[in-house]
Amino acid sequence: MRDVRVQREAFDPGVELARLEALGGGAVASFTGLVRGDGGMIEMTLDHYPAMTLAALERIAADAERRWPLLGTIVVHRVGPLEPGDRIVFVGAASSRRAAALEACAFLIDWLKTKAPFWKRERFVDGRACWVEAKADDEAAAERWGS
Amino acid sequence: MDILYFAWVREAIGRDAETVDPPVGVETIADLLDWLAARGGGYAEAFEDRKRLRAAIDQDFVGLDAVIAGAREIAIFPPVTGG
Picture 1 (cartoon, each protein chain N blue to C red):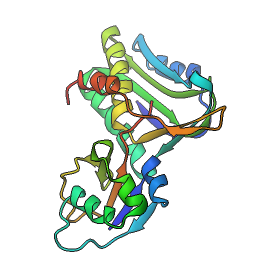
Picture 2: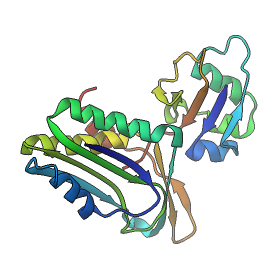
Picture 3: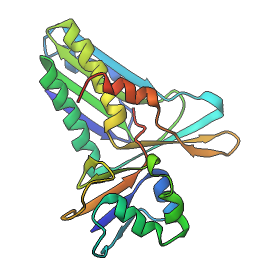
Picture 4: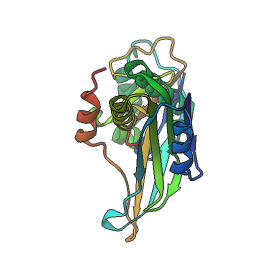
């Protein structure tokens, strides 16, 4: 099972986890990313490349399936305006092996951060707005999985 | 060919897409950026620091040295920041 989505609406991690659990593998790992309100940030807007985004996420999920014995993967990424505390991304992997589920989950979020066409713009309480800069840490995290 | 711009590249240029017909000699993405930057204004500003730019040809990430012959859709954007 592979489910990859890009959506404006909120998602429920519990629902996604239950779908992975229902695959019967006995091991489910997930990561949920939330919007932080650091430094007076009041709104984050997610821009993306609609013609490319889903295909990029599909490639990342398919790559995870090639590397680990997985029963299912779910990737959900929100776009549009978000507020601090909102969930922005969910990745989950189900397997019959604990290590496979955990490693695949880390791989999914590391590659999503560097290989899917999303851009974050932040707006602050004092009126400033800026595009988030890519982090070298994210690049290093993605590179540990090879290519 | 169509060119799409995203994030601050789009804001600097002031448009999200355009159709262009580059002259002979514009062979790579980098050449295309040089040619567009010569228009000045937001183009020159957006394309000044190549280290801050990434590209895709027909929805696949490529390096700025990628050849654009046969491309239908080229996208120019900053390093991605999703997740």
